[in-house]
Length: 120
Image (cartoon, rainbow, N blue to C red; front, side, top):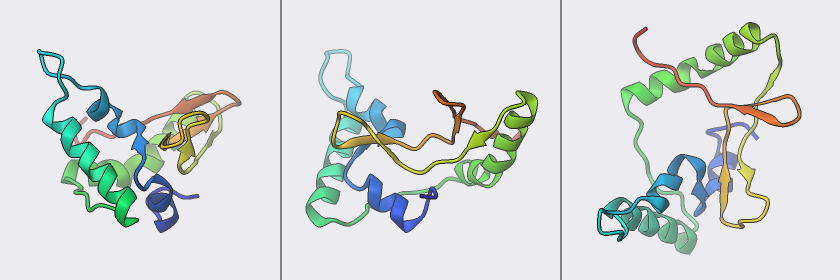
């Protein structure tokens, strides 16, 4: 399953993702959930109830990263003399409504996440 395809979005629908787990775990100084938690909870509940994917935004910096991710993975593979296998959404093995989309797998038990800053 290729990332950012209809199949990928459907696989993530209503699930806590690794990219957003901080929204679930973040707390105020008093130890209560933050507004980000409440907003994320509403987003996930809405997706689960409607079966529709929530709209999301992509900043110019995020778009830059998406456009340069493949080159970054190739550079990583070259520098470390390894192969990177790209993957889609990976369902958590024990938490039904959670998963992640690593940028790639390395070997039998590794993964890689790349970041592509807009400036060197």
